Length: 512
Image (tube, rainbow, N blue to C red; front, top):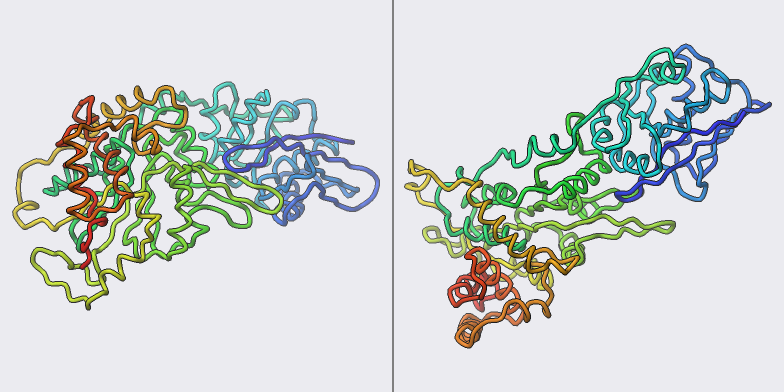
């Protein structure tokens, strides 16, 4: 007897429907075809044990399992459940009349319990697009799938529950989630707040500008000056995720297996802070079974690289293209996948190995030339993609001891949202352009026009401070964002002057 069950394979952040065909005939061998990997091939032992524990029998006949389409590689253990249900239906132990209406996915344990899978959300979206009635999956993943409208999501804990459902002896509980309600429930619910930071008003201002224009930023200062504390609070002043961004972000974390059982939808912008020992594959994504890296997990959020010069140079260089394209393509011999990677890069660094170069009170003990060598670990092309260079100075005792309340993230976020709305209107006819940091050189010339006095100021500043040519466009982009925060239609002299201050590392002689 031939029976078909349906599951899915995840490629990138999208899914593809897989038909699991099971044929039982005379003989005594078990065949698995359709480009399965080792985890799929090993399913026989898990399936057989789970079927026995559930009170049913494993047929002692020739069983052929085909995973179609047969030219696409199938990976992982999530095909255990559809294979087990297909074997039971093909051997006549459960009816097969309802199988065509459901996606079935899940890893089986030897005792018949069902383990969680990765990529439940993109699989659920694919099931809904293909017109399936429902999706039967592990209980730990059911909230991810339940946010897809028009699809019934059943969370199961054991193989016996699924068998009872198809035998019509025991119904499964449908999990329902109101997507809009779930989205609005936790939106803007952040653990940190800028009100926690005493002093550092100039740094807060720089991060507000970065958030308003989507600019990448690097913080340079001695240990303990508050660089990490400030970076952690940057997501709290970014505009809240819209529903499309929330779904897109949730899909990536679902594919990576990073969502907890309690999560249905990510409503807070992600903040990722990998250690400096990270490999280039872990940062951009890849591996034998290509998985999203840290830059994709930070999509629509913030990627914080603490102590930037300590990262391996090869790791930093692989970020150059994703920073420009806002996506990363991972190619293998048989296929390639693409992950989105539109993130704000926030980096921090000490100004020198000892950490006290340019410190107002402590003396730098680094040998001559060491500071320049330390800074040169960051390549010009990478630095070229960072718009704001901000020097962070330590706060004195009176600031943290002060009882004066600092400005809350909520108030800063309101100004950032207002500036982003101006940019949305400005770039309404540009599909891939949403904020100032994404402007091309041609767009900068069009949007960031300055007066003759502004041109004179910029020329003078570039000559006097020894700014490089690459700093020109960056200064204009940041000045345009400062003007948007002020609600100004034109880029004025004060906007340019403030923007020029955020190019510390381009100054001649900054490091001696």
